[in-house]
Amino acid sequence: MWANLASGRSSCRLSVDKMERLTPFFFPIARLIVMRKLSISMAGNKSLNAANKAKEDEFYTELSDIENELKHYKQHFKDKVVLCNCDDPRISNFFHYFSYNFEQLGLKKLITTCYKSQERDLFSQNNSERAIWLEYTGDHNGNRVPDPEEIGINYLKGDGDFRSQECIELLKQADIVVTNPPFSLFREYVAQLMKYNKKFVIIGNQNAITYKEIFSYIKANQLWLGSTLSFAKFRVPDYYEPKPTRFWIDETGQKWRSMGNICWFTNLDIAKRHEEIILYKSYNEEEYPQYDNYQAINVNKVADIPMDYDGVMGVPITFLDKYNPEQFEILGIMASTTIDSLNFGYPYVNGKKIYARILIRRRQPSASTYPQPEETTLMAAEKQEGYGKE
Ligand SMILES: C[S@@+](CC[C@H](N)C(=O)[O-])C[C@H]1O[C@@H](n2cnc3c(N)ncnc32)[C@H](O)[C@@H]1O
Image (cartoon, rainbow, N blue to C red; front, top):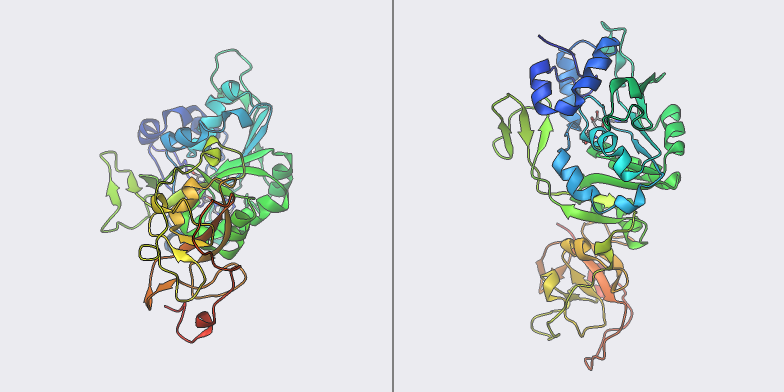
């Protein structure tokens, strides 16, 4: 027995049995949606597969990863409207988490929007292709479970693109947005959250830290990393091609991929942000050389940040996982060939290019006796051809 539980984008055709095994809690919702004839037929179309493959935005977050992170934010959710705006409720564990923890978190409302492909022509044989949004205001029959009758299913006029006006209207209703948005649209996604002044907890690729727009929010303390890092695995759709590494198919036939460079981005306060890094090392010129192309010392490990150096230090990007803005301030980044007001080119030590670094300085000057460099400026060396270039 088969049911089409796929959105246009995810296009995974899952058997009811398989869906029950994978996401038992979704099953009533999936069945309801199927019963209401909102499902579409399998997009068994080569062009769709090609388009999907090109973007590879379909990575379904594990419930345990959501639980591990969101346990650090419980105090923020009371009386709040939560929006998951990149979430097919038939697949998304974000919808699952919030609907099943609705009362425990004291939520006011949960809204979920489900995305369908903009490329309507790819679905031209199926005129039932429409996006939906769900609204849940909690348990009304006292069984503490989100029953299908308690979930309001509404049609969207468009395809559920988070940038569409009707989705923006839903965004305006939200207090906190929580999801794993499409990686390929991460910049735009964050820009929209900032524009509408929303609180958020979202998943992204760690590479996004070095995007100019994202880094400028980090530097301005408008965005920071969440509590947990580096996810183990994501479910991916059937059409995803096997890969030699970080890919497997489980006994149910479900495809998986793992990624080690994923993190949470948020602007909600978390305890970790107030914990100081315990420092124990002392500065010395041999261990902490100056960069050739920037007036700062190089620190190879976050744990090795010297406790008695008050000048600018270049630290690995993993520093952000431990960043306490009361202990350090962020001044810039050395993470690309492009040089601008925030990014000072890849760091070089004794002519050798090293890994990307974040430039930081202690908030509270130590009682150091070491001579300290003057205010940071790009050194003349940086202007020389070849520096900061790959
Ligand atoms: C990384 S997946 C995560 C899915 C789900 N949030 C989860 O965590 O399991 C990103 C999702 O965003 C959807 N998506 C892609 N482009 C979108 C858009 N423009 N607007 C809304 N959703 C979009 C994709 O179809 C995909 O399901």
